[in-house]
Image: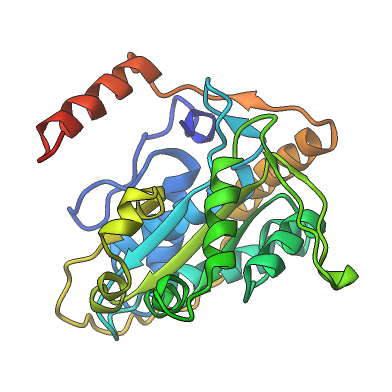
Length: 293
């Protein structure tokens, strides 16, 4: 769905890392390669997850598929402790900092860390309807949110509601609180991207069957890294992004801001020979083969 981000036709369509699986094509792949190259401990799953989060946070609202659904994502990166999962956020921070030197408006796409449901809704209403927010140790956060006793149903409701409303002309209803400063107005077409990282044990400790039944967990794109051996420290860790990457990503940021100001949206395709109907048929075939399908 991110065909607009592909490289020019005369450039190789993908980037490989040391004979491993190819990274995504286009600008997403370039961002992933930067995160990988500058990570303290290099892992391609971390790089790909980070690149998807960054691009979804920028483009999630103004670029839509044919049904009008936004491209925002709820991403959970699962990796054991000490393996380098923080490289995704650190790489994103360096990219946003580099972009802000010439594109100050990019900071609107890097969301604040909201500690409650009302705070998240207020950030979307007042900060920007489209951004990516990073949540460290999301497994622990989910345990608190989803606990049967003393949980945080308002945060869960906010995550569910914002995701459901992420469609062109979608509306996330505002909230009326006793404190005037906590009140929010309706949010038209929010496109929030959540990027969380966790150890597998903490994440799976948080979720249960009921969280699948109500559609909460299925909203997450879960990217799991099976690495069990800590990699050597990368001598190029922390390298700032190059001018070419910043220029290409900056052009996307500026185009997105222009579309946002004009309240315009761009429809993007699924790829050659792929339609929404064919994808739906494919997933229905998988679902029907599952127990209870």
